[in-house]
Image (cartoon, rainbow, N blue to C red):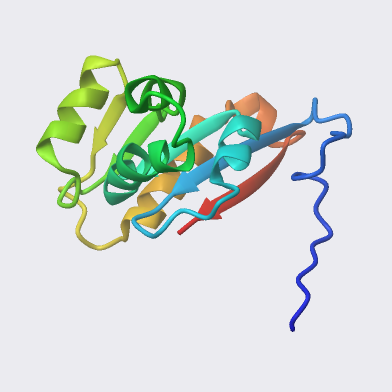
Amino acid sequence: MEVMSHASTFLLPQQPDVSALTYSLIVLNQPLPRFAPLLWNRAQLRVCADGGANRVYDNIPEMFPDQDPSEVRLRYTPDVISGDLDSIKDDIKAFYLNLGVKVVDESHDQDTTDLHKCVAYVNNSTPVEDKSKATQQWDLVG
């Protein structure tokens, strides 16, 4: 049996001083790991690619079978959905728009992937004065 290990303190219960760190989570259109809620709760910025929004909406409630799916969806609402919007289901897009989620339509840019669009959004959302002194940690689900 292969043993997996990691050197990141990000998933450990005791967090180091993270005042200089910005944790951003990008969710892609891939199956979510069991620890996705932990990553979600630790992140300061949660960005879904358009297909990743479908995954969050459909799959996160399945991780909490004893809880009302509607309440789980409200707890796990992305800050931003970015991409060319070719994968997001219309009803899921409407659900998140009604909650005030920012949807960034990058359909004019077919030269980059949705991942690239999300990374660019996270990078551009860091205030200019903070970029030189802040450390960013990226966690990618997908």
